[in-house]
Image (cartoon, rainbow, N blue to C red; front, top):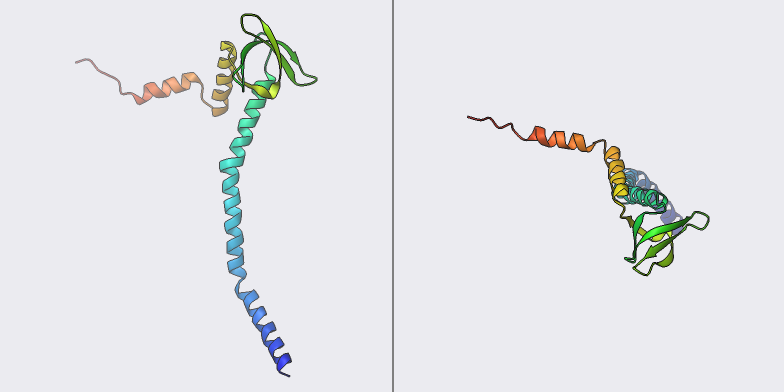
Length: 146
């Protein structure tokens, strides 16, 4: 008899706990959803954006560009092979040729390429250099001669 009484009491207690903890459970679940969303916008999304920019940079390499690799080797691109994603660069005074994977490119050092990359970044931000200059002039008060 005691056993049945204890089982019924435990069952009633479990039902009361389940009903009473629903708001707490939802609050905790909501908290974790907010944390995951914040982590996405602070960590994952910027990393994906940076990766896309790097991929665009690496895919824009052309013959004649001066590049720097992730190992610090500087040279001029003499061949681009799209089938196996490699490039051949020529470096040094003895014109040594070295083959690299495209993912090993850190930067394109050709001046006109650097300007093109900066222009693309400005367009993405919605501001051109002219707008930035105009904003800077507008912020400065005009000087009057006395």
